[in-house]
Image (cartoon, rainbow, N blue to C red):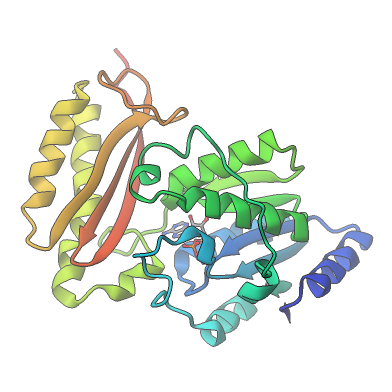
Amino acid sequence: MKVVKDISEARAEIKKARTAGKIVGFIPTMGALHAGHISLVEAAKKQCDFVAVSIFVNPAQFGPDEDFKKYPRVFKSDEKLLQKEKVDLIFYPSASQMYPDNFSTYVEEALLSKPLCGLSRPGHFRGVCTIVAKLFNIITPDIAYFGQKDYQQAMIIKRMAEDLNFSTIVKICPIVRESDGLAMSSRNVYLNPAERKDALVLAEALKLAEKSIKEGQTDAVKIIEEMYGFILSKKTARIDYVEIVDAKTLQEVEEIKQKVLIALAVYIGKTRLIDNVVVHAKSN
Ligand code: AMP
């Protein structure tokens, strides 16, 4: 496994792999790796001959009051985990490599970025699209792997890749959860023991909503109301949003007749967590 910090070194490694006729798989991450990230690596290992992982805490996707400074940075243990997975390349650039002083070009998806996290994190998806576009240009992957944990992000990246004619295929992999149901996240380390218990409310609220839909409930407002009550029964919980949207367009739905995304963002104490589930309406 090679670890490279320079863009030119990364390009050289990719060139070697390409010359050897290898299919290149790529997983962009911000590090502090957990089993969710590793599931993406495993998917890539199955389908590709050369697997590259980037580790970069991207300043452009954090708002001024967000956790950029305190985001966990644990490169040595990330490196060990990826070595065990027999990853071929870690690209671990510095912020000044990715955003030199004269940097002034950004990539913005203008539709799917608007609702859900787009409302509470202005500029977030612009930062995400910009870094992913740059990484796609550096790594030129055949296939890139993203997690459903960040459903909206994955949909936006898919759209960006199509709109800007990247030749990369974007694959979305299932959410990996702790044994009690909490979606794995690098931010879970911020939770104290009481908050960790309350954090289960995200997955449980989604289960409740899924059950309602499976039982034939089609009124999105009623389901959301039920979820609100359930979530707010936890002392440390504060809701950012709870939404039921069309799974393709991310537009709000009132009557559930199709495949929908139930998505939520909830602060547990000071930690903002997200989770989601895709549900097919009960067929009549
Ligand atoms: P991050 O390091 O948070 O930027 O995440 C890197 C990639 O891992 C993104 O595509 C995430 O959606 C994905 N990911 C994060 N958490 C999970 C999880 N619990 N299950 C599956 N994929 C995940």
